Image 1 (cartoon, helix red, strand yellow):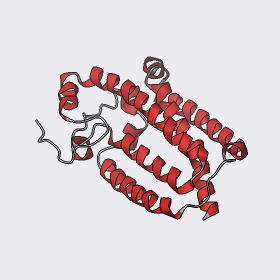
Image 2 (cartoon, helix red, strand yellow; image 1 turned 30 degrees about the horizontal axis):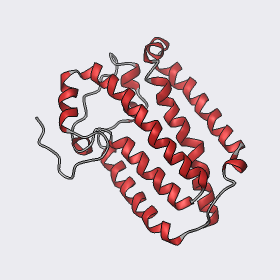
Image 3 (tube, rainbow, N blue to C red; image 1 turned 90 degrees about the vertical axis):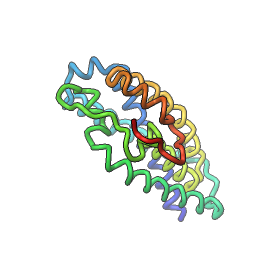
Length: 199
């Protein structure tokens, strides 16, 4: 169990900060990336993410120096959150393609147009992917019970909130009134129990 907890705790700083920083790079500088082109943009970001993951791995001893041991009472909520995360991921995967997940419609809107997603989980919450990320990160934090994991979760809440704000600005430009109407009837991150009928 201690080994599993350790590797789950290590995975979080190796993957999540880079994933959030990816969008901090894409959204504010989208005009630059569009000029550079999708292949070069993705290649440069892949190198950056690999370097960031390598840095986190190299610093794993100080990063994971404080942990609170295996706590049986945290395993149950962690398992329930993992299950919820899997259910969310399955629902989302029916609507989000890999191209959308890496932002190709943003980088190349003319060659890769994407419809405004309003069905399935998107009928209940505007950002189900980010909700799913927060759920699985919290599950990992509770399971691993390392201080670094809780810090990564707290930073994720803040970082993803900023990413959502940047993304919503871009979606508003792309879809105009359709997106305004969608925002008016669907909450940003905490879903309603019942979806409203599509208009």
